[in-house]
Length: 256
Image 1 (cartoon, rainbow, N blue to C red):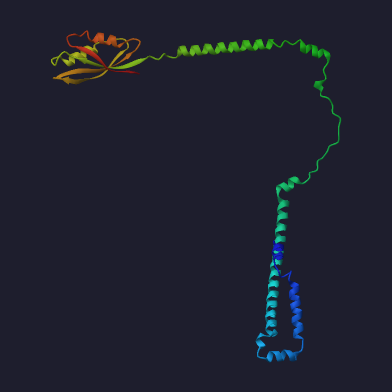
Image 2: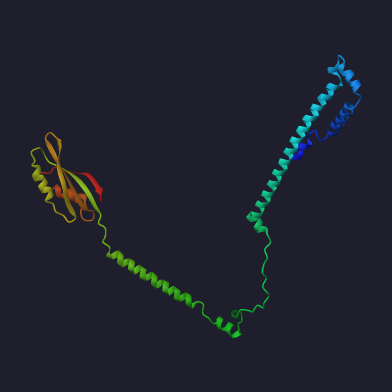
């Protein structure tokens, strides 16, 4: 970077020009004083060669100052580059990859005679004995053991299933029992309905629901076992009370 910066500068390439100008300046300064004094005393003294010499001296001084500053910059850059190189080398030495690439010495043990394993040495008689082994007998024994285990598991499952109580399917039924007219005794009608006792039948709550013209119907809940009591059997038993019951309807039917 510093080298490229110095290549593009014209100070170092044009240095001989300034050296020649400096030499000519000192030659003119050491020349005849009379001629110079006469020229300087004339009316055009300000535009003579003395003015050019003073301007040249100023330029040379400024160039020297600039040269000194550039030399300082170059020295600082060289120091920075050297420090960076030192840090880079230190990092490369301390990195694990650098350690991995370092050659490692391997300890080579002296050669020794390899002995064949004892299991490899076999005689002809041992081979004959291996040929006489029954390979299928073990499979048959395993099949018998597996069959015995399977039968035992099936027997335990059957016993467990038999001991478990069977689920009873039940249903909840809401019945609407309608009387003949408004003169029917609804309390007597409910007593007749609840007098029906069947295996698998359980009566629940009831209430009177107005129908119209002063007539009420009996709405009664019951729970039945599906295998023992059906809706047809309930309707048949309730309608036997002809003096009080006109009809029976199923208002709701839900499985439990």
